[in-house]
Amino acid sequence: MSKAQRKRIDTLICPACGEKTLKMIVYGLPGDDFDFQKYFVGGCMPSEEDIGCRNCEWVGVRITLEQG
Image (tube, rainbow, N blue to C red; front, side, top):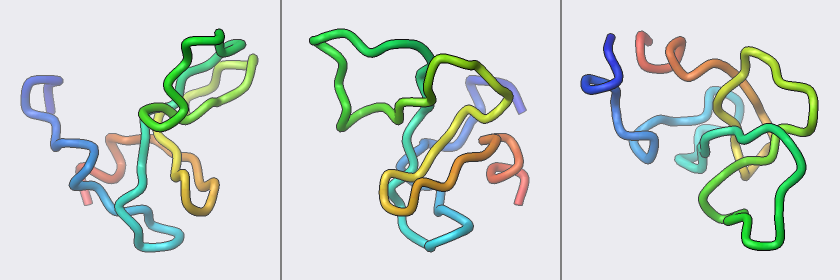
């Protein structure tokens, strides 16, 4: 699935808690202007996880949710 065909992130459901509170993970130290409501902070060590749940702290790979 290409980026143009991706499902909207606000339509994806967290597999752990069932809520629609998933956000894109941003790695690194957030600055003063970082939007904590829009993104999930992933810490300073990047990994393959690119999506996280603000409700239950679950993290995973977006493509696995889009295929399911």
